[in-house]
Length: 176
Image (spheres, rainbow, N blue to C red):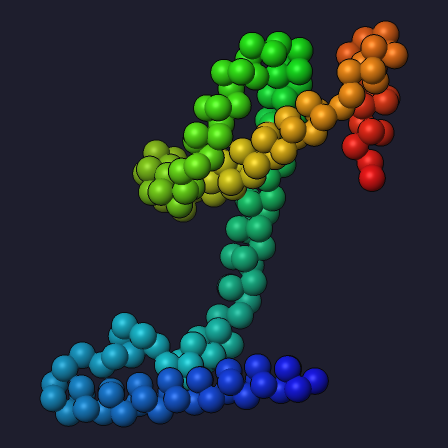
């Protein structure tokens, strides 16, 4: 309880100091015929009022963005599963694909975002879906590949085919 009270008190003091400081700076700037700081950094009261006035729009746009992000996650997951399946059937692809995937994953996706937005267009669903897919694809691919490689060879030898092994014994080996 003390921790929550300390967090709430700190946040309240921070917001109050921010509001009072910016109000004082704005008075000085307006008296000197300068642009108000409000144009660059809105006060907490302005943010609250704007949030309250546009709550419906914010919620609807958030739901649209979450829908697109989820579509990208699902796309990335499906693509990673398909690629790992190819890796397990064709090991030479794995030896080429994993180092490339790790190298691409080392770059921050935020660096690719402007290029992706320029390519697909600003405000399009496809740009958000593609960025979300990139964010989820590489970690899923690398972790799923590590999981599949960790399945003992005896499991595959006991089954008649690799597909049966993956569906039957292989997946059960991954359950803790």
